[in-house]
Length: 288
Image 1 (cartoon, rainbow, N blue to C red):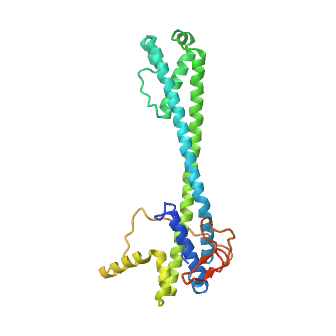
Image 2 (tube, helix red, strand yellow):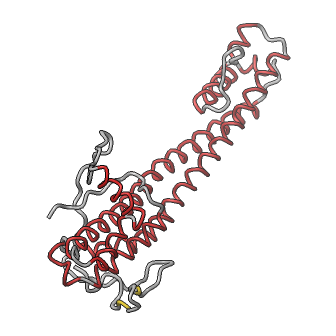
Image 3 (cartoon, rainbow, N blue to C red):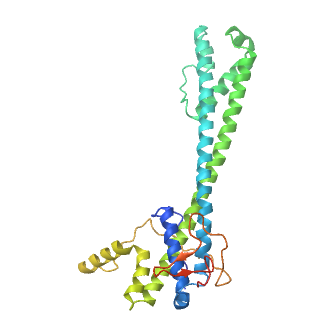
């Protein structure tokens, strides 16, 4: 069978809707396992159950990674601003001391510094430190003492450490987001396969078929399809050049029936069918 096509881009549905849609599709897959088994890839429903469970874990992880990256960025900016303040005070002190032009240039006066750019602030601090340490008598005549230069070194170290931490956090955040997107898109791909299998299996049973059609958009989706039929462009699809994704085989379990013992956070442990019955055995049980 054709493997599921899974993207790493942000899904078009919100994650709560994806969870509910996945649960509904899983319920239908469980309820009609015998009829749909030969139409679905082996282990698809078991993988869907696992991904529904996993989605409750990867969403908080992605949010945490993003929050940590934002906090690290704020710390970095704070360190940069503190360093920029030091640069401005050193330059002001040198100007007030009526230092010669070459000395002023040696301390970076006249050189533009963007106070929000790490490399600009670090370069300005390093120039002041090099001039002060290289010309101690000159520095003393300008009122610059050792503890001032020690402060420059401390500011440089703080900026370097904050920048390193920020880059590390920023690097981890996208991977957490991609994993969240992969899981959500696998759920949507599995839902689509269950929908298609149900449409074929129950093509002559309008009531049963409607339950599977609802996975693809419900009444609004059917109205759009009806409108397309009137225009004579049924199933017309316009492919976008940047919407082509590599095909990735979804994870397939070794057993056709896998029970996931822990219920999905925020969802009912037992799903009720539209006829009022219950599907027991846990998420993923009795499904192809």
